[in-house]
Length: 322
Image 1 (tube, helix red, strand yellow):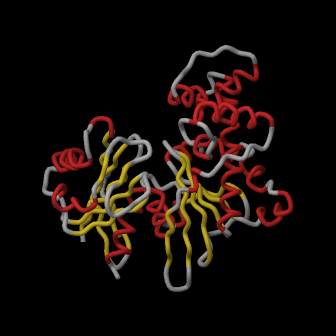
Image 2 (image 1 turned 90 degrees about the vertical axis):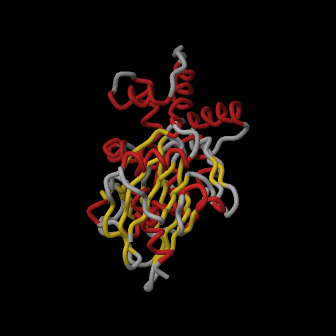
């Protein structure tokens, strides 16, 4: 069965045709990426994908959305689009559909992609556990969090908004970051501390600590300078980002009772080499009396190029195979 898989984030919407059978994805077609800002609605982006594809779209769709999901009105956290599930058939011409949180979709991808689609970051090496809980988190435009529960019979994906939990600073530098976040937003969440846009707050906080005047830059500029090493404060901001992501991932694993953790998100993949070389693993295990427990948790990075699209198709396959 053919399905239109769509992964809608804060910046981009990705479309592909997937083939599903017996609850699993058997093929994912070549994705087409569109900028959200270039289309006024999902319906307009949908029609643009149809034109690019050059043929009528299937009557089945699965949407992974960077937002909490409900049955009436879906508003994105970092995206002006609005989706009204009751109007899916009228607006998109589909007869069957699934709508899932974007990191819920990544949870389905974690459950179904091959072992070679992961690399090891820290903790015990080996495949993900066949039974138990896998915590999934990852930075992009926001910080996505989901939970994968594997049982002997099947798997279950639990969608969460764990990225919006309060940020807990662990040293004086993070105290300074939290002070800046509170001044700007009223509170500091994990998403404000370790999602893509947070590099700006890290950069400005470190510049202030160093007594250096820096011009205000957007996150793309600072990430580029951090990754190419051209700005020492940006590089330091990247190091702090990796430390914080390790601490947050460890907190989530404790809260969810995880046997393993998977880091995902477009930014997570870009940071692969930096995560391996940073203090990510040290911060992940630094949980006081539970340090030994944390050292026994395997942490991996998913490297599949389109986990959101693959996971959207997998979610549809699971729902409609029952």
